[in-house]
Length: 622
Image (cartoon, rainbow, N blue to C red; front, top):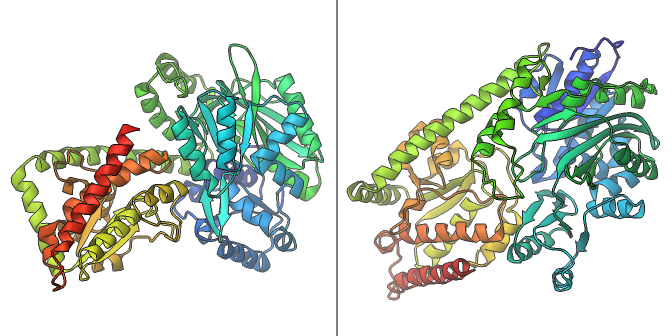
C-alpha cells in the first residue's frame, strides 16, 4: 500500500525484533517521508532489506541483562536526535518503562503512562479492570502459591482443560529476562507441574478454556477518546493458539466496541492498543483475552485495509494532529505467507480429535489460497513497492525446507548405520580414541539452556564420582545470545536428578570452543547438521548423544523447550541413559586416578544408572 497522504518530516527509531510488526511500522513511516532507523538485537532480520529503512543499530542481547541494552539506548539518544521512539515488543517496552524518567528526558516515547502499563502488562490487573467494568472474561483464579492451587482444585470451580497464564510474559530477575508462555493443560498433574514451575518466578492466572475464534479490535486513542478503530478476525492460528498467521478485516462489533471503549476510557489511554477477544461462532458469546498496549502482530492487515496506525500515531504524538475519521475496507485478507505454508502442512496432519487444537477444515484452508488470485489478499512481508524483505522471507523458508529434507535423509542414513553393529562399535572406538588424544567433551544444543547444560553437569558429576579428573567438560549452543538462564521448568526437572541449573548462563558456540574440544556431542540432527556446515573441520569428531544409550532406538534427543515438566524429565532421562553408556567402564578406566578405591567408580556409575532407572519408572507410571 502506497499512501498519498502529505509527507511528514522527522526521525523515528523503532525498537524491536518482530519482523512482521517492525517491517509494517518502518514501511508506514517511511512511505510518509520520515527517516526511520531500526534498533534490533537481530542483525539478520528481513527488515534490514527494506528500502524505507535508513539505518540499523545493533543492541546487546536484552535477555542476558537489561542494563547494557538501556545504556546503549541512552548513549544513542544523547548523540542523535529522534522525534519519536517506538518500542514494538514487550522485551523493549518493559526496560524503557523501568527507566522511564531517564529516557523521557532524552526523547519522546510512544509508551503508555504508568497506570496504563500496569493495567495492560500485568494480566491480573487487566482481569480486575474488566470484572469491575462488567466486561465478559473467562472464569479466572489468581494463584500465588501452591496452597491457592490446592484450594481451587478442592472447590472444583473450573473444569479441564485449563489455561495457565503467567501474570506477565517476561520477568526480569537479577537483570536477566525470563520468558514465560501460556499453556493449555488437560490433566491436573500437568496443571500442578506447570503452576509449580511458574510460581518460582511469577504469580499465575488459571482460566477456564474458552473455545472460540480470535478477534482483535485495534485503536488509536487520545486521553481515553478513540480516534481510529479497526477489527480483524483470525483465520489461521498456531495449533495451540497465541498468534495470527492469516486474518481478515471485518466490521466493528458494536458490543465488543462498547466494552473496549469503556476500558480505554477508564485508563485514559493515549497511543495505540489492541484489545483481544475470543468469540464462540455458534453462540456469539465472547470473552476478553488480553490488552496489548503496543503495536500488534496483525498490524499489516490494518494498514492494507486503510487504517495507517503508525503514521497516525506519529502525527498525534509529535505534531499534535488527530487523524480524520476514516472507514476501512472489509473482507481484506493478510497472510504471513511463508510461515502460513508451514502451518498449512501442520494443519493437514493435525489431530482433529483434539478440540483444543486450532485446526481448520482442509478444504477451507486450500480454497483460501484462491484469495491471492482474486486480488483480495496481501502478504505481511512482500509488497510491490518494497519487495526485498518478502523475497528474503521466502528464501528463508526454502532454506528451512531444504535443511529439513537434508536432515531427514541424513537421519535415515544414521538410523540405518546404527543398526549395523560393526559401524556402531567403530564409532564408539573412534570416540574413545579422540577423547584420549584430546580429553575434552563439548555438549551442544540449540540454546544451551535446557539439554546441553544438564548433560554437562551430569557428566561432570559422573566423572567426579568415578575419580576421573583428566576429562574436561563444557557446553554451548548455536543460538546467538549469551548469558540466558535455564527456564524454571528445566531447573525443576534438573532437581529431580540432583542437578542444579539455577546459576547456569548460556554460552554461544565459537571457534575457540571447537578447537578446545576433543569430541563434540550434539543433541539432535539440527545441531549435528548445523555444525557440519559451519565447522567442516569438526566432522571427524562430531557425535550424536542418544545412540550411546545401550539398546537405544532413538537417534536424537528432542528439544523440550516450551513443554511440561514431565517432558523435561523424559528428556533428561534420555540424556542420563546416553551418558551412562558413553562414559562407561572401558572409557573411564583410562582416566581414573590411581587409587585403591578406584574400583568403586564403576559402582558409582551403576548407582547413577539405577537412580535414573528408578525415576524413569516413576515418570512412566504417572
